[in-house]
Length: 315
Image (cartoon, rainbow, N blue to C red; front, side, top):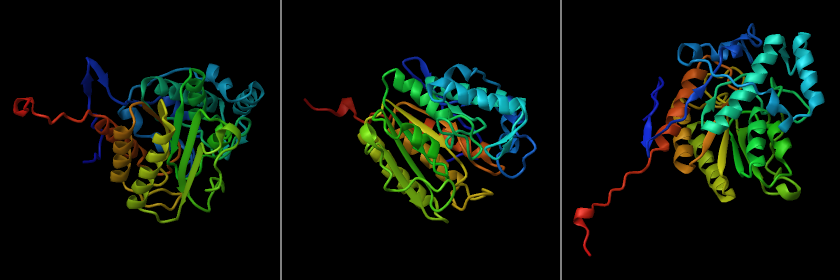
């Protein structure tokens, strides 16, 4: 079962509604809005028709990962309309970036999907690249770590999340795992990269060949889920990039909407506490990609019915 349009499965457990929601804000459409091929507002063009604005100022959380000097540099660059990370910045970019961080933190609190831009997984502690200014998922993850949580980050963007890996490379509180297209930007994420110091064996990279299809995607996800389970995380954070989709303008995987649904289902079945944030995806179908993934998580999270028949029991 998969969905071409949004169909959230709403559950009631002890009177509490359990459902991953999509968090969005129209501010994201004002950032780099004239770009038509790479990281432009066209990516989220369908979201205002389906989701109300959510808001949380992310600036107070940025220093969990990024130094104040770096934050100020990005802010100044936005107000001076500079070009950084291959994108044209503007004052609206600063507003979008703050809100992207904020909604990712909010998603980590509520178990939701933050449909944000700019993306974040290429941003290091003091570096911007690949359309990324601040590392949204790393900031939300560090907040959880500071509260005593162990977090597994699962990154299925077609590009390796070099910034996220760098930030947590020596941490034993965060397990970072990524499968991504081999031999492409940012040319990191090698199988021999396994962490260092306390973080040894807390990094797992699985490069995949160009042209990989749904079967490879889903079998690789099974391997990653098994590895993440061994880490015994309290929370799973998903860097959800949809540039593996068969219509993507930049990458060369061949994944379908059904695969993103099945990916979500597997994750929802495997883990109790999940949140996710949008990374890449450079095509017109981000909305159905996100909603299929979220629907998969919600269906996968449904309790398995107890088929034991007490009336037929003996003893």
